[in-house]
Every structure is written in structure tokens, then in C-alpha cells.
Image (cartoon, rainbow, N blue to C red):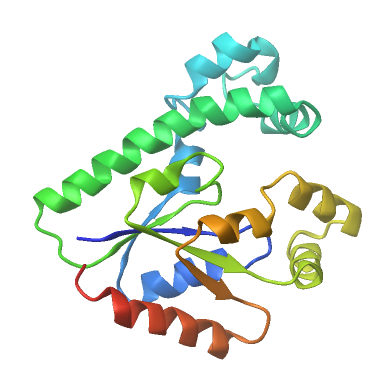
Length: 199
């Protein structure tokens, strides 16, 4: 069973590739979904977040105040790293548990780990190979502006908060370029899938 890390910066089209893999019947472990559950009601990240950041980042009902948390993350690099460390540990443990479960079940096909921060969090050490989805910066900006209804400046700020694609390309085993249409995108994915086999 081969474990493949799938990553890409905001607006790259990583989620489109992930959804395509799911439609084709592949197992995809979603790091963002694990993270959302970890920081959701009664999630395992809430207690360490409380200890690290205090009660001010929580609503009256005990749920995480995501807007306040986001304000801290975007304005305080150290705070962002502290939050990422908390959530990353939980995501990594859950990812390992799911992979082990699939192995115990005798799963033979490849398993994909959809992780936006694959390289930033050192997750490339947890997978057999990594696929990076990229696109031109202006294409990415336009996609996110249309999708989220935000300004160009906001998108640029988000992109600048992420590891540059030039750095990710040095670490990735395979690069999927998503600057044209979906046909070309999926052809690249299919070509990589044909090389993976049963893993």
C-alpha cells in the first residue's frame, strides 16, 4: 500500500484533484477535515488551545471563536506556529491511525493524504511520495477572489503566508500544473495514477 501526499497552495486546484481522486474511488485522508474536527465542539485541540491562548479565543458556549483565532494567526507569526503545532500533532496521530487501520484491513491500492501544509509541517516524511499541484500566481489570485469574494490584496497576503511554490517544487516528487483546463489537469493525474499501480 503506497501512501501519497497531495498538496498545493491556496487557489492551486489541489481540492479539485482530491475530489477527482475520490470520484475515481481512491481513499483520501483529508488533513483539513481532521483539523476542523479537532477544533470543533469537544475536539481534542480545544484544551491545549485554551492552555496556550487563554479563554479569550473561545465563545461563551465553549466553542472556538474562529474569527478571533484567525486574527491572531494572521497578525502573529509566533501564534500561528503555536496553533499549527497543536493541530499538527493531532492530525499526524489521526493520519497514522487511519493508515494503520487500512493496512490491517488489507487495503492494497494507493492512499492519498490531502494536506495543504504537507511540507511546512514535515508530513512529507510520513508518505512514500508527494504530488504538488501548482498554478500561475495570477490564476490562483483570480480563483480565490471569485471563490471567496475577497480582494486581491487579501489573497496575496494569504499566499505570502504560505511556503512559496518554488520551495515546494524542490521537495515534491511530482508536479501537477493546473494553469489550463480540467481535461489537461486530469490527464496529468491519470498519468501519475498509471505509474502508481497497486502500490
